[in-house]
Length: 170
Image (cartoon, rainbow, N blue to C red; front, side):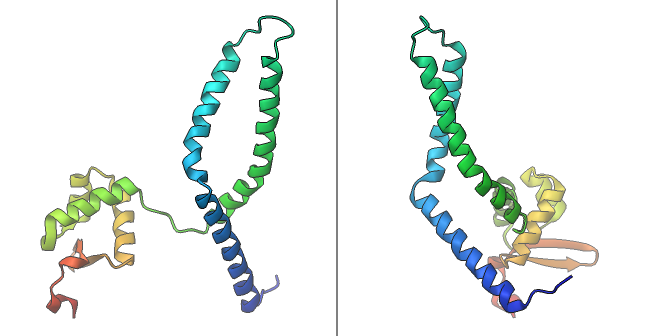
């Protein structure tokens, strides 16, 4: 196995990051994400219409137009699919994002408890979030510094870092 030099890795990584930042920016700026819902609805409507459309006669142009639409959709899919396949592979390098609903519910519980904080099991029950998800959310919040963990014996509790007093911070 050949070891790739750090400079080569760093330069290819920076080139890829630059390319993906540009692509993501272009897609965001072009309203790509906002348009997804409209395309989903369009697909639902047109597939249903195609299923229930009965041509009035052999010369009905609607059938040919549905076929043309299908070919266009296939072309767009074939253009986008290699990108989505590559992004799916690259996305495996990203750290797992905590469930946004769980994150909000746990953060809300921590805010309610203030300086007292709470154990992971109490937070899980109060936030109606599975314990393993609670553990993942708390680990990410501790890692980013917004939550502090403190232990007393075998019991660990968590509270928002913003509730620490000046003395506790030093």
